[in-house]
Length: 295
Image 1: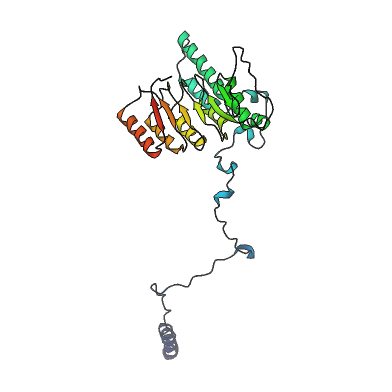
Image 2: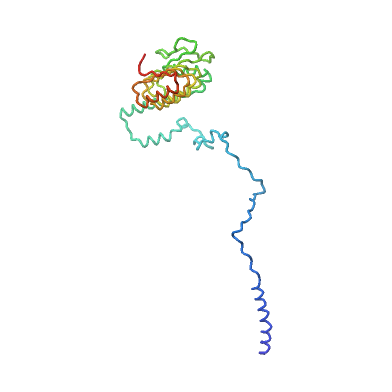
């Protein structure tokens, strides 16, 4: 029995050694070399659809709606208009927050100030540009109606008289477009003219004479705007008794190519103001700057 077991072990052991030796002798798989560049795979297309090229940005295709960063609540989808829509405006939220954060003051002076601000805002809105008026009357007559109705005066070419409203605010101006009515002079003396009202004077190509004497709200922004609107035609400009403009706004008058007479106040004369006047005369040698009251 013992001899049989020895013979069996001698037969099995070599086979086991051969199997282990064959496993150890197998070649190891090569590790990938990290330094070698990997092949770049082409981008896979989903659903076998061709790739759509990105559109280039073109500023000429940008619309006014694209520039809006939010949509008002009453213009959103599925919104509706109610009877309260009459009292809605874009400024309601800011006005409400300001009202809640302001202490209640029912003194006579506060009520008077509030009423004056309301009236001023109303007048400012009434002086806004109305496209329908210009379409009916034309730019020249529309500007004439705007100025005369608010206490100013105008003069047309080929006419010797100024047109001004009487004490009952009655005046004689055509109510329909007339081709031969072209404004030559505009007098805004002592008018309650807002900056927004200047938009009614645009597109007047032949105005030569312009006076803003006594307009309290007249400042540097007014000067900058009129220097663009009348830079090719204006010859005479009177801005006396306007305490709110400075030499910064006066420097914008260098755009006016035909300006020959400029009337200003002497109470505003400082070193920088005088230097600005000298520079204006250097740019426009034909400009005559008149200082103070000389009428």
